[in-house]
Length: 259
Image (cartoon, rainbow, N blue to C red):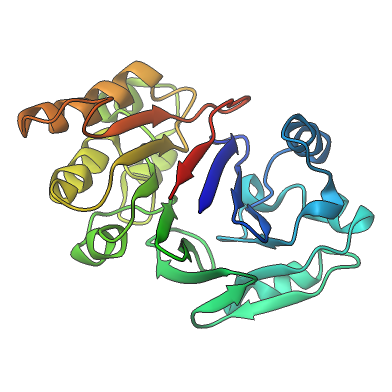
């Protein structure tokens, strides 16, 4: 069994707890150290209970808490090989392991998907424990068949739904920042996420966590409704056939169990 708890999700910081029968893994540690510790405490865990931290890429909203975390606890860190030297300059007492292929943490096997993002290197991760399969892909700017193939075997997915294109275009961001977000190396829009979900209809995916929402260029309602429209068009009922949850930036009380 896998248990997935999105702790923090959004432009100000990202951190997700992935648990199996034997291990507790943090996927990114990009929010405040104290806030992450408090969120874990609410779930009966302390920093010493975390088996490993798995990093997607080097942007601050994904690694911001690493220096403080590794000053207090020598939790092993796993990251894509091209960013490991950078991370070694920021961690204190933790060893940084280079991810170049599938690897195991306890009873969980992790595999990666290379994202299209303006980072040194960025990946999404798939977690497999027995028959339980979960994947998280954020910070990618385009929809590809490889992305769909990566997500298809999963029972639950955490997928970026960063912005509403109209809100972004009308919003206060600079022209250059808007171009960056809308580019193939930026972030998935609600419409692009809906394209992915459309291609996943009929797959194993039964739970969708929409994540990494922009606070200024999106709303929970817009992201949720965009995803549900796709399901409805295929005759599926949200909450019965597929569950859609929108992850919050500051607090999330949901835990998804995958048998």
